[in-house]
Length: 163
Ligand code: GDP
Ligand code: MG
Image 1 (cartoon, protein in one colour):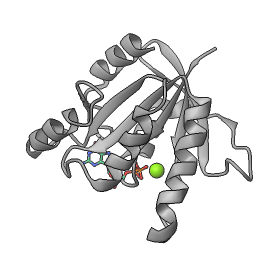
Image 2 (spheres, helix red, strand yellow; image 1 turned 90 degrees about the vertical axis):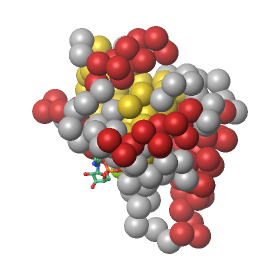
Image 3 (cartoon, helix red, strand yellow; image 1 turned 180 degrees about the vertical axis):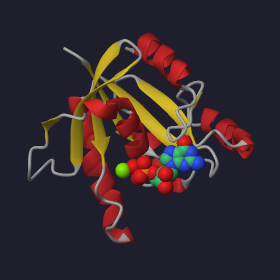
């Protein structure tokens, strides 16, 4: 069985971009269970020679601010339940936000391994964001660019070490 990897984090950090990159051309929905889990996408993918079942948490970008936090919590809870490993993504250019801290607090209180991803790190301005990310308490953030495919070897190594 492929390792189940959930990508969680606040809207717009690049979760779906990474999901699509790791799924690549082999896009094959393995479970889109309508209803309770309709906002999560499951697909088989890989990083290097490692097969993964990827879980993208999505679909709440367009809801109002009042319900956003509750929807995020639902998405995260469901992903946490299903996954073997959590990729917690933040935006290295924007640094750590209040919403990132809400996710971090939740992720600290569960037992599955968490890899912190500092995405959008292709820009040189991202250094500050990566520094802030250390303070979230998940060890060394893995700097990646989901859009440009940078940092994938480091992500591979982190998944091997964390799984
Ligand atoms: P999600 O809401 O977390 O799923 O984020 P998306 O994957 O939809 O990406 C949000 C925006 O960030 C899109 O405009 C992406 O093109 C952009 N984005 C994603 N990854 C990167 C990256 O590595 N670098 C930059 N500069 N932009 C990115
Ligand atoms: Mg998305």
